[in-house]
Length: 118
Image 1 (cartoon, rainbow, N blue to C red):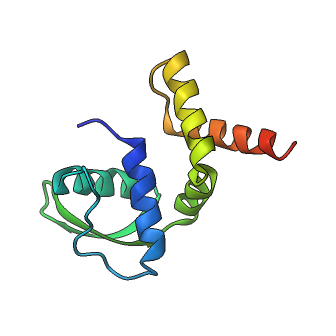
Image 2 (tube, rainbow, N blue to C red):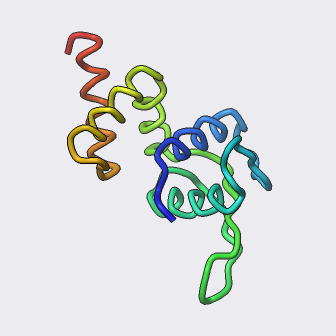
């Protein structure tokens, strides 16, 4: 499965609104539970969200997110503005197709800085 940064952004927005409670089931329009669960796992691994994991010695079965980390808040702040988000995605697609997470975050910050004249 491919990482979907639009879904990452939507998950961060939803979790920010939940105020530190364990999420048993999160529904996001146009995304399956499997896609959402996969993104919970990789977002936990990336240090964007805090989770409780249900697992066996071999694999993660389910992840229960309950909040954003400092890094999750930082990325969400950089990606919150719709016009900045769309501009960063368009630059990414037109130049190289996809970008590593740290590069897209840096691009978002760069665009935001330009908007405020820094």
